[in-house]
Amino acid sequence: MVRTQGVHAIRIPTPWLVGDVNVYVLQDGETKTLVDTGPLTEEAEKALTQGLAEIGIRIEDLDQVVLTHFHVDHSGLLEEIVKRSGAKVYAHPHTERLIRKDAVVEAERKAFYLDLYRSVGLSAEEARATYEQIADYHDFMGRGHVDHKLREGDRIPGHEAWEVIYTPGHSMDHISLYRAEDRVMLLGDHLIKHVSSNAFVEPPVRAGDPRPQTLVLYREALKKVHALDCQIGYAGHGEPVTEHRALIEKRLRDQERRAARIVEKVQSGHTTAVELCRALFPYHQDQMPLVVSETLGHLDWLVAEGVLAVETTASGVWQYRVVKEPAFCG
Ligand SMILES: [Zn+2]
Image 1: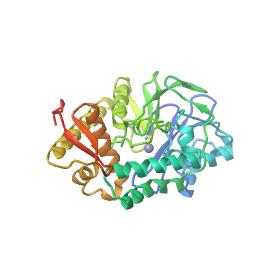
Image 2: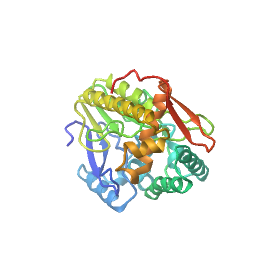
Image 3: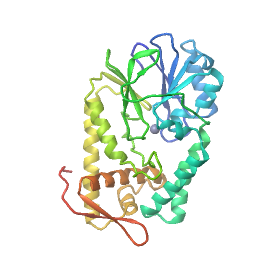
Image 4: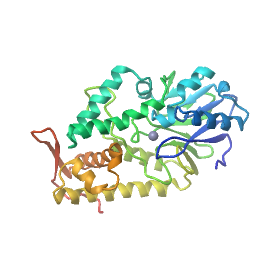
């Protein structure tokens, strides 16, 4: 699937609906760098070992691991890889606290999600069950850490042609890598060809800060990548992206369409996020964390645009009403 000099792709199975995850070895230069790891499963470790063997590398030989973001399918094997290779870990500054399995951070996240799921209109029991779906992912990651922080514009040590592009939205710590000389990108989960990438609702990086508007940030990041000249982008899932501008335009348009539908639904009396989730995604109620993120992301955006207003009811549930016609057409 990879037709690019200096980039070797390895497909790694995951136990989830998302299917295989793609990780990449950067081969320009002497430094052996793995971008993303796969989850902490025996099958994933086997696939990684085999994929590395195709280019004559063992896990023990790796010098560096770069993480595009903290999600468990991208970072789960990190501890194991570092233990065996001593590789240095590079990631965005926000990644560290999310992968080290720190009890305080985990308690903060649990409280955030339980509170959020009540505010969107789920019962206490439904909120707990929805949180458990996210918490279950933790079994597929080791205790990771970050040695060196990567920010917008940084270069990957040993592979100076690769530049870091900060692309928040899918997660707040998400980075992509761009090699301008031959217009190649490693996209992580920022842009996936066969499926739209979810802008997951996340707690603020610092407790007490406002909740990040992940879909709003995601749209800005999509526009930033749209401006880059890119002939091929290798994604964390699925086939490479060759027409990145057309795909980004489609994603932006689809979001606008969904926002217009949400405005209609609010007008017709679906005034809480959960009522909207049930109206918009009747067949995906077993994937509540995703569905809530998708819906709430659009609601946040519509509030930011001044199309919707939100109030908190006496029972603590967010309630929406239309105050202005949306400027974009459905
Ligand atoms: Zn992800």
